[in-house]
Image 1 (cartoon, rainbow, N blue to C red):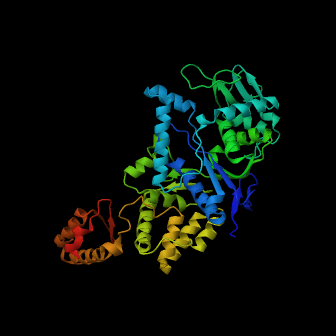
Image 2: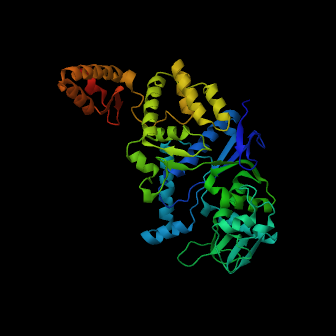
Image 3: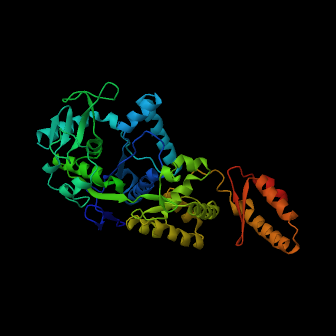
Length: 455
């Protein structure tokens, strides 16, 4: 069996992955708060852990892996959006949840086995909160329930900081009812305009952190194999999850994995910088989901990823070339062993892409096709991409246009160049000319029948 090695944030080293039960491999990943479209950074953990999910299914068997990713559908940001828009909270969360699923599906990500919504698991959250009070790890005051951080001696082990070090720099709510500034909310009261549920402490709603502890326990058990998310969740969210669950006597997650953040053209994504965009923005601009997926794979998940327009162009060029080859093959069999080996080394997706380049040169088209599918590429998101240069004759036309162009540069008569270019554009082909040559890229409206007279 393939040995998978993963970097464990908890131990700060790469370890052989040994599941608690090879017949029941379990992974939990923190999902989105659903109040708006997912921005590009939100998509990175989806793609990262989709690749891991695919790898685990390949190694241990499709029926032996359970992947859970939650939706936070009770949150103050959602409440604020409802107040601003005049729409109901359920309308907003239902709509944005479906947006998320549609957009991530367009990237080629598989849907997890379980996608719990926080509002459907309030009772287990209340039960866990009550148990933490009984054990002396939480206390109720003024309609709130707070977790006693100092009651868990290992608090801070994941992020590598002591409680006292955290207090000065942490974003913590200062409230007179707290015993300690670091104590965090498990339950808080709701007014008439806010969503709320009955509880032993009055009508209220859960804090953010308790939902993942409760849902992971209900869906995956007291102990499970992998917990993932972006590294912005390492503290306080994941630190708090560990504290709650461990104080319940649960083993919780054995392996913790965190992906690094995303930049755009070398800068942090920010609305003030004008480089903030959602996944849907890119899709609507005509950038195929598979291209976005490929760009994500080109950088190791534990390194910051820089999204650039040039990377997207190069990704599209590479995928179109591979698809032209793979279209001839049959997508069955086994993924390329060298790709599986790269992924087994702490999800080395950049190494996997390098191996795909070698596979493409070897022209093993059936293995190439199956491996692309294994990675979440070559799906159904790009209609017409299978009819690429070989099948459509665009390669020959690119050579023809380049020859005509070179001749025109000598005669200074570009009439034939312009005629060919106009015919290509009319057929839905993007014409890219540079000092390196001519590249013809079929767009979504590509009609090869319009090119027959040119060939």
